[in-house]
Length: 284
Image (cartoon, rainbow, N blue to C red; front, side, top):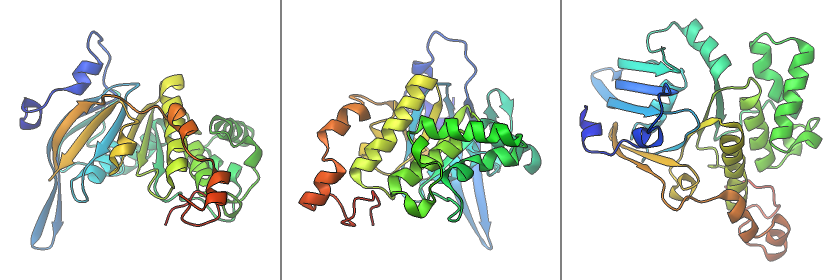
């Protein structure tokens, strides 16, 4: 048992008690060190943890705590300096870049703080992009794209360009894009960082429904404690180590919170909770 685990309750073991399931994510002694000339930066220091299928986990921590480095390794965007990473039981820690790209395409969906949509491309075409890289036939691309947009409530906006969509709608398009190849794991890095309070809860509602209704494993990085409360489990990082790993008590349910918040129209009338004054759901 490593130092992190000895001081902490194993939430993954609690969640999976009584099952023989293989963890979706298993990290064993993960270190990540960056060489910056004469200086070495130890971003991760022996991380070991498990995340099981169907979990909804929030990764928390201050800037420089290691949470984004961990997300890059879990998302097969980077490799650990030392240690092993198993994704659905397969050791992917030493795979080639080509093999990692293939796994990303097949198993992982990504959502980022910046929506990363192509400006001159419609919502549907933005959503279809991962299917192009995966070599999906044209007719199947469109079917998948429309189905993914329907899952986030944007069927009627498929022909709109990003500039014609609110911030919340753009993030919904980004989520649909992450879902289009039917991943088993959804990774979201500060997905509400550019959104106002109500729109943030709407996005968390989508994540909670995807997790509850479709069994999708969801892992989000956030520095906002109120956003972490929508997850089922919180893992807090400090100085490259796990400081805390706990099940969320009194979990927030987005579908229950939304009716208590002012509607966008009320924000426009009252001039509150609307930083832009235009109801577009983007906070500055």
